Image (cartoon, rainbow, N blue to C red; front, side, top):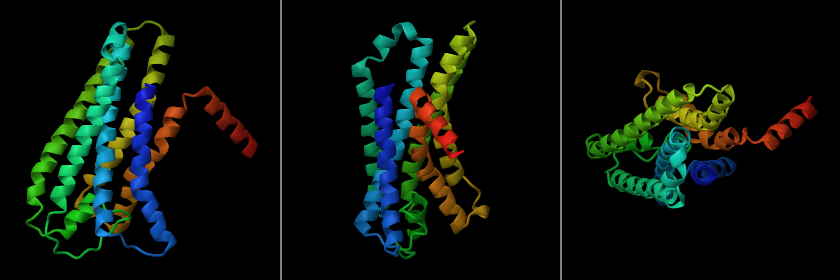
Length: 251
C-alpha cells in the first residue's frame, strides 16, 4: 500500500506542478503568456500525470480486492515484482498515450488565433483553436482513450462490488470497520478524481462560460492532487491528534 501511495504522491506532485507554478508566475508578473514549447510540455505532462494516476488508482483497487478477498494469496499475487510491474505499466502506458495525443494535437493547423481562455493549456481550449476539420483525426485517439478509461472504471466498480460482498459476509463488526476504513480513502480519492473530471468535460454546452470553465478546471486539475495526501493521511493517528490540537488551539 505504501509503495502505491508513494507513486500516487509523486503523480499528484507532478500534476499540480505542471499547471499551478506557471499560473502563479503569470499572476505575479501580470501577464498571460506562455511559449509554444511550454504549452506543448504542459499538455503532455498534464495528460501523462492524469492518465498515470487513473491507472494507478485502478491498480490500487485491485490491491484492495486481493488483500480482502484473496488475503491468503496476497503475498503471491502482490509481491514486490508484481507491484513494480503494475506501476511501471501504469507510468509507461500513460507516457505513451500522452505522447501520442500531444504529437497529434499540435500537428493540427491553427485557425482561431492563439488565445487560450484558461489558466493552463487545457485540451478542450487547444481544440477550439484548431481548424474545424482537423480535430476529426484526434477523434480516433479520444475514442480509444475513453474506451480504456471506461474499462478501468468498470474494473474499479467490479472490484468494490466483490469487496463489499466479501466484507458483508464477515460476522465481526470490528472486521467490517477495519475493511471499510482500509477502502474508504481510496474510494474517496477515486470518486473525487472521476466526478470532477466527468463534470468538467461532460457538462452541457448550454451552461458553458469562461468563468464556469475556469472554476471547473481548478476543481479537477488542482483540488484532487491537493487534497489526496490529506485524505490518505487521516488514517494516521498522529495526524488526527495534531489536527485536533490545532482546532482546540484556534478555539
